[in-house]
Amino acid sequence: MTKKTGLNRPLRLAISQRFLTAYREDFFYEVSQVEDLEVMVFFGDRDAQKHAKFASTKKELRFAHRRLKTVSAVFPGFGYLNQLFFSPGILSAVRRFRPDVILTEGTSNIANNLLICPYAWWTRTPYLWWDLGKIRGQHRENPIRRFLYPLIRFCYRRAAGIFAYSGYARDFFVEQGIPPQKIVVSGNTVRVERFFPHLDAHREGGRRIRKALGFEDKLVFLAVGGMDGGKGFDLLIGAFEELARENDHIALMMVGDGDERPLLEDLADGHPRIHFAGAQYEKVGDYFAAGNVMVMPGLGGLAVNEAMAFGLPVIAGPADGTELDLVIPGKTGFLTGLGDLEGLKHHMRWCMENPEKAAFLGQNAQDLIREKYTLAHMVGRLREAITLAAPGQFSG
Image 1 (cartoon, rainbow, N blue to C red):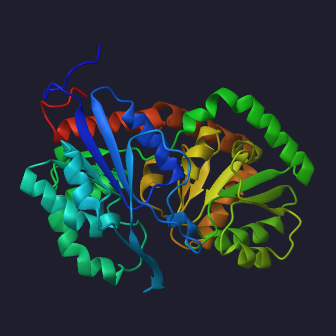
Image 2 (cartoon, one colour; image 1 turned 90 degrees about the vertical axis):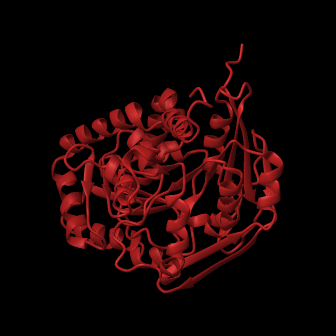
Image 3 (cartoon, rainbow, N blue to C red; image 1 turned 30 degrees about the vertical axis):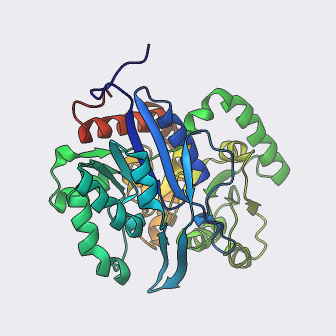
């Protein structure tokens, strides 16, 4: 028998997104399976050629949703890739659903939030502000964001709760005057638990990859992610080439694709121990298993979580703040500064000289992911945030 909420019916949760990525589809599906929730996801139906990372997935979705026509602009400027998305039909779509709680995509979806937030205030509908706070390590603030910040701050200060990406985001919002008890850290992740039952098979696949590349006796540094700027992969190649002159027993695998791949391949200049694997989907687990150390010098992503699930220590530069929760210096990996070539080389050299200790850090990394950063944990934290936003209405 289905339990009842304080409303004597399932609590209606509206989720607003600029566009829907494939990795978030998994999360929203799991949220839709929570008892006492009726979930509707609203997102922009945008198809992009030049900036594919900002396009909605075309896979068949497993939850109630509305694809909304969206006006968008993605353009370089002020040293950033700026993005603006607006779905004119978002307000009428949300009104028809009549949610009890709204989960909105924070700062990055500010154009739509300028409709959603007034609706929430007018109807007294609590909303959660899902946000990363600010990018760690930025030298200067985007002037577009600075111009909009008074509106952004006005919106998040009136939210029923903050669903923060990381502990770093939590600290940012506390600095902005949000009471700590109104903040739940999401533990941002993907379905890393999908790998655990198949680790042996992935390790066998990893051995095949290493053998095919002639990397069997090498300590393999691994980089995974879109090659579209901000990742610091050029810095990684430079660091690796310097270290490779000292040591014949290291290799570098670059997994991913993007606009910058040709530039990175030119930078590598045919180095025999640098391999560009291209984008991998079905076999990405084999590539994680083929590596020994994950390196993400710049704006990272959820590949860090996945690498840790395979027992890889991580060397990470400033990203969205989640790296500070995941990469614990000397325990699960190491942190470097923005553009810090010497720091990057120092930590890579340590892993070269201490492979057994590095493997121990990797085991700690895997334990941390299992204990705190599975998708099931993230769903649990959202349940906590919804309970915070709708006290007495949602059983949680």
